[in-house]
Structure formats: structure tokens, C-alpha cells
Amino acid sequence: MKLAATTLVVHPVTQTPTPLLAGSEVPEWAEGMVGDHLLDHVDGSYETLGYAELAALVKERGLAAESQKKIDLLAALREADASA
Image (cartoon, rainbow, N blue to C red; front, side):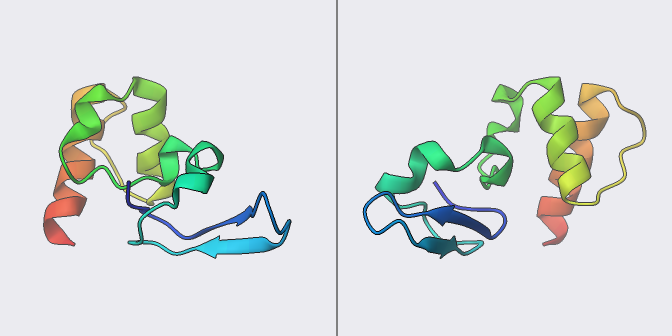
């Protein structure tokens, strides 16, 4: 799993804040700590997400969808991915 955004998690062994950078793979130890909204869904797996998750991704990425319908949220995400 790759990150779509940078985040900070606490390492379970060292208890130190550990940055996970956008574009990097999520370490196995951190998989349960990273929310789905931070994962890169460029592989087309947007269809597996529910409406609330799609809306959160659109909002988080600062995108503008034509409407709040699922099909328009998907279109906004795909358009942003294509232009990235």
C-alpha cells in the first residue's frame, strides 16, 4: 500500500513519532494505524470505496466534483489522478 499523503504515526516499539511520506509504502507495522483516506487509490480501486470514503478523499485532496453523487466523486478523483 502506498500513501497518498504524508502522515505521522507512533512507532509501536520505540514509541517515537514516525513520519510516513506520501508516495512511500506503508510499513507492515503501521498498516493498522493508517486510515484508508491516506492510501493511494490510483490503481482503480476507488470503486470499492463507499460514498463517505469517496467524499472524504475528494475533500481531503481539495477537488471539486460536479455534484455529490458517487459517479461525480469518482470522476473528480480519476481526473485528478490523470493530471498528476
